[in-house]
Structure formats: C-alpha cells, structure tokens
Length: 216
Image 1 (cartoon, one colour):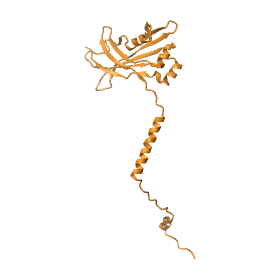
Image 2 (cartoon, rainbow, N blue to C red):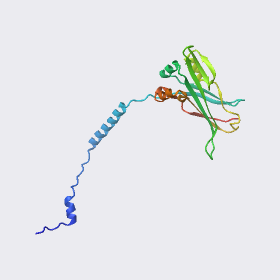
Image 3 (tube, rainbow, N blue to C red):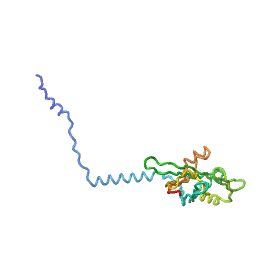
Image 4 (cartoon, helix red, strand yellow):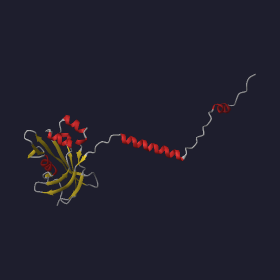
C-alpha cells in the first residue's frame, strides 16, 4: 500500500532547522568586554616602538626690505644640532641648510600668481687637518670659523639676500611671502642620502611661515 504524499509546505517544514533564540548579553558583561578591548588596544600601543620626533627649526624673524638691487629677505632661526649631526660634521661630512621662499599675489578670479620662487643654501663643513669650519652661501662667499658654535650662529642669522627684483613686485599690491628652512639631504652623496632618509637625526626642518608685504 502506497504511503500518502505530504504537501510541499509540510516537507519543507520538516527539514527546516529550529530557530535559536538569542539571549541578550547583560549590561555588566558588555561593560567588562568593552573594558577588556580597551586594555588590549592600550597594551598594543605601548608595545609599538615610538619613533623619535624630528627636531624643529623655529623661525624667529622674517622680513622683506626694498633696496636699489631688489627686495632683500632678512631671517633669523633658532635650533640646535643633535648629537648625530654634530658627529657627522666633525667627521668631515658637510651639512646643507636650505631656505625656500615663495612670493605670491592673491587673485580672486583665478589661482594665486607666483611673483617669485627661490632658495638659498648654506653649506657647512669641517676641515679635519686645519680644524676650521667653513660656510659658503650658494657655493660662494666662503667664510672660515674657529668653532662649531660660531659657524652655526652664521647659519641661524644668515646675511640678507635678494629674493625678487624690483620689477617682480608691483607697487601698491599685497603679496604673501612664505619662508621655511630645512636640512637639505638631497644635496648629500647618494649613499648618505639613503642613510639620512631612514635616520631621524636628519629630520630637521621648520614649518612654512608667511607674512604680507606691500611694496610702496
């Protein structure tokens, strides 16, 4: 005798798994789990080695003056060489300190106009034989110094230099002058560049600062 067939809905219902009823997690247990997660994050953060912060150059003064030759920039900086950089220069490896300058004029109808963009590099070196320090500005105007402090004082207060000609800036217009100084590792030899990029001792730079200037 043939067994009666079940309707399709009854067959599907027979193989449907029973639903699990989820019980809510008590508030106390949720708090403990949340606190445990925060503690694990804090422990992981403490386990990660903290990289040394890059030394910073502070710009104490930056101003522009009009002269017969053009517009001269006057700057003053404050910073110290770390032990790694001092050891490097005492081994006869030169250091390069570059000041970048950008002079722009705001235009409401278009992008800002760049009136001048230039840089100046001071090369500082030490002669192991003569025990003298040397500083040259843009590969010229070399001066000799008897101590590291003396040559660094020259770097911190460099001579004024022309950043724009008299025809580059319009009288009566307002210009934004942006200045920064940095230890220029791009001018090192190739092997030293690779080491400097991976060494925090070489991360020496200032932030960009800007001021307005209106030529008369």
